[in-house]
Amino acid sequence: MLRLMPRMVSTAKRIKIPAALDGFDLAPRHLSLLSYLLFDGPTGVNALAERLEVAPATVSLMVGDLSRQGILERGEDPSDRRRTIVSIAEAHLPAIRAWLAVGAEAWHRALEPLTPRERTLVVDVMAAYEREASATRRG
Image (cartoon, rainbow, N blue to C red; front, side, top):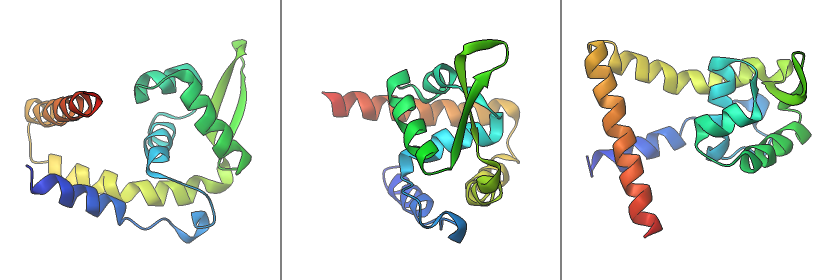
């Protein structure tokens, strides 16, 4: 795993950003946020913060940045006007879908031969690694 993880990260970083998104200030931290919005659809800031395991203020900053660039749109929740719903701007949806599809398809092919229980185990092990590495880094 120690030899494999750096290669996996390097491979993920080399996935080309589509030309349609080239001029935007996109960073790896935006990938998870965009992934949730792409696969789960429009979502509230608090729900995004919970999924990303960061503070709502952090998500608000990212959403604000991407909204100013025109990548994301913010709107009112029709059922609770105090709540903001975030979505990917329609104009950028095809490019973001193409960008994120590379990794999603690779994971799908890699996990497809596994049983549901084995898939869960793989995800649980990777999450445990991330937690432990983060805890060690924090000291």
